Image (tube, rainbow, N blue to C red; front, side, top):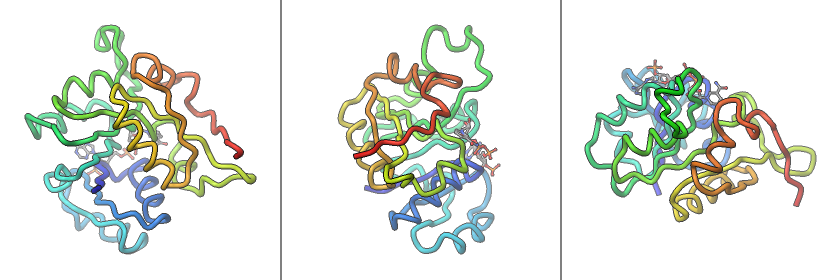
Length: 195
Ligand SMILES: NC(=O)c1ccc[n+]([C@@H]2O[C@H](COP(=O)([O-])OP(=O)(O)OC[C@H]3O[C@@H](n4cnc5c(N)ncnc54)[C@H](OP(=O)(O)O)[C@@H]3O)[C@@H](O)[C@H]2O)c1
């Protein structure tokens, strides 16, 4: 399984840090030359490889860590997303009810990426917590996962677990995803699971 993070700001860097901590290889891209990420790669070590946006699209699992509205730019890069899992780690802070049209923001992302299996996760913690050790007080920091695709939810829950978090699957986007929307009840809770 190959992984790429699209976006190298607060969230993308926090995720890259977590992949590096666990020795899982990941590519990371932003809007500019990979050389702009050389310092980050030096700091995080061999697990993290800067790449171009175009090359990042080849990964089996893509993590969108970009401002929400930029998903349309990512979507326009490929007509067919079959074979890829796309993680929406974005918070749609300023979408109007008209834009949402009764849907969850991750459902909009899924509609824009035909063929992709879209999973919502990694959006619910602030970047400083997301990038720090998930082991806390003898337990593990909880990470909620939601998707319309059961198989993709399982695969990404396994990744979440490999990164050290305690995954909790919430089911489909119109129910579970709703709990993870910006200002949703499970966002910024920083829950710990003991087991
Ligand atoms: N910050 C948090 O604590 C936090 C927590 C949970 C969720 N989130 C969500 O995570 C997302 C990113 O937030 P952030 O705070 O990390 O933002 P940020 O620091 O401003 O970083 C945004 C990154 O996205 C990249 N980007 C923008 N458009 C792109 C495109 N079309 N293709 C490739 N890369 C693109 C930017 O590239 P350049 O560097 O080249 O400009 C930048 O690296 C948002 O949706 C936010 O709601 C943030």
